[in-house]
Image 1 (cartoon, rainbow, N blue to C red):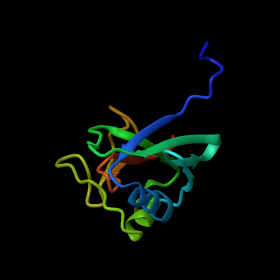
Image 2 (cartoon, rainbow, N blue to C red):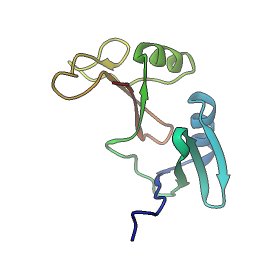
Image 3 (tube, rainbow, N blue to C red):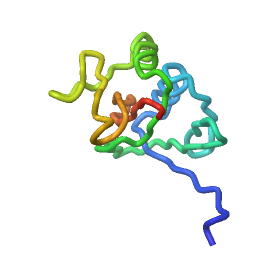
Image 4 (cartoon, one colour):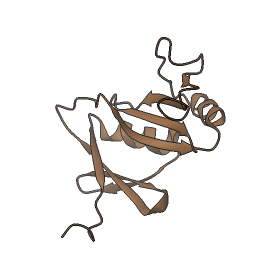
Length: 126
């Protein structure tokens, strides 16, 4: 029944205007206004719904991952736009990149938060 449905994902924020500015201006994504929120238009015809929720609680897990060919370049460019990367003790370097975990857990990855506190990552495209 659902195998032919074009499913989509969504997440909440506490301030839709701040989210639209962050995802559009800082991350450079295409944002479309919708009647109940906003839509992120990603590569591959992927759409993600963002909606305002009065009692929003940030996700405690990574809600969105962006594979990149050069993680250092991505981190540098996003940092220059004001994105602040998370630093985890004994896990990330000075830039906020967790390196060398590919052999055990996955690719090099760096996490940051949107204005609503939701966790996003850039990770090395393998």
